[in-house]
Length: 320
Length: 320
Image 1 (spheres, rainbow over the protein chains, first blue to last red):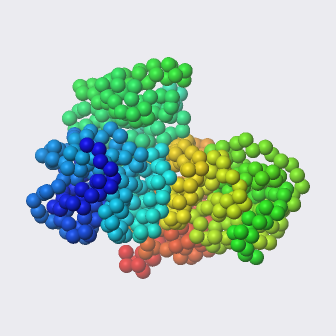
Image 2: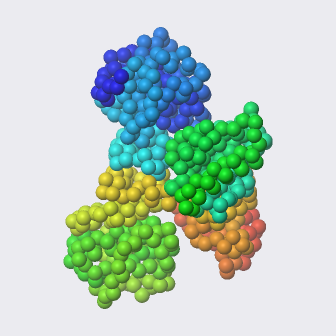
Image 3: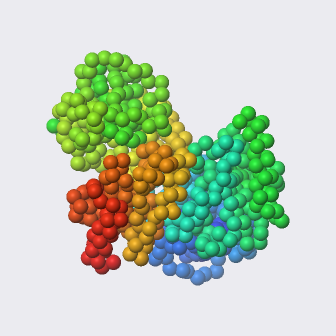
């Protein structure tokens, strides 16, 4: 059931022994929400704990610095930035039907919780958490400000994307005033690349191929490369954005080979091309500008030929 | 002589036939200021013109779209974002001593104008222009908002750097409310790379060398590469940031060979290293985190050895 922001804050004020859940493959927003809420609840003298199906990536460790783990028998479960049941991950499967309160900013939210507050206009779930914490009269410490700023900054590509609203910027201003270390966080999130990441980017730039007069770029990330470079998930983060970033490219294709041989396709398009329509042909889906599909039992060359065929057809229909 | 923001606005209101000057090698901030002021003055029925020593880079053409060139005999000269005499460039040398009003955000402003308003806390000169235009009661159109947003976004690396203040974010929010096409501008400025740029980055990633256990990275951009790739200034923009972006690198050195054989060094450091101190040894200067120097009649290998020697000495002094 949908409830108001005020009601959501009241539920948290009324509760104790609160378990906070983040989505699997956690990012800066779900972790920023969880750590900010954890700190806020503990500052009110409540007991709170955090769980996630996957480990917290090293670069986000600072969000939880100084928080003492509290053991208790859970009385209230709140999920942050979790859009759907399957995003809980294997480690949290037991909680999927036990969520008392869901705080989220995905318009597609799966309505799995007893009560939820969803604001699809929020660029980051941390925008919602900021409001909830203020409604709860939590004093926003510099540490909480860092957590909330991290979520807002990472979910907007450092204020770059179309999801940014005036409110996003006003909140960033307020968080800096409250002590958020904005420049340090941004440098760590956006201006620091691991040596492995550099090697992956070098590989990507070397191996990318161009088609349809430069309007389509294709990048293949074979498992052999990933293993050879000992690349981890974090080193491959956002690589799928590279092909479409090149001037003139309207369709950027990234094909990643998984350990089981599956080829996972990520397609990014600019108007007038529609990524979701192209991926739908192969049983996939997504948004107009970013969609995906997967192939098993096919070689990269076969998959590439099929994708280029569909992309070419759509280009023709668009008069490109 | 230093004047107040109010006085600066009054000078512009009192003037007509106003010539607006940008600095050489113009960037988004100086061009954002100039185009916003040009539009603002013309909206008040005044005659205004814009001059720059170098051509406006293609990607900034939209700032001036729809502005009609006005011919007149100059009565008032205003410089925007010009920190010092030598930044006027050859094409504007005749105006260096004729500036009536200087609007700038560089703490090091050379005080070349009859009157000036300098606010070193402004992340971008466009922050100042926004205030001046509001003080002048100019109606901020979506076009003017685009110009001002461009300056603020580009001079802060899209709100990434340490120069961003709460005011910067509040202004960004206000400009989006006024109709600035923030996401489109950011995509054009930060998420679009020319094919040549991609080739330059590939070259950079391939040729970078690491020293002192990965704490120093050195990048050489020979003139032969620049010519072979037909790289223009815009394609090399910001390349000097690449070495220090790599995890663990405290000193990022970029050496660029100029057509006359001069080797221009750009040094970026993280604490505790001090770029200005290292470059000072070679007659250069700059800030603690970013400085430069130049060598003539030396080979890259010689220059590299000299730089690594100094960097090594400073590392030792810092106990690294």
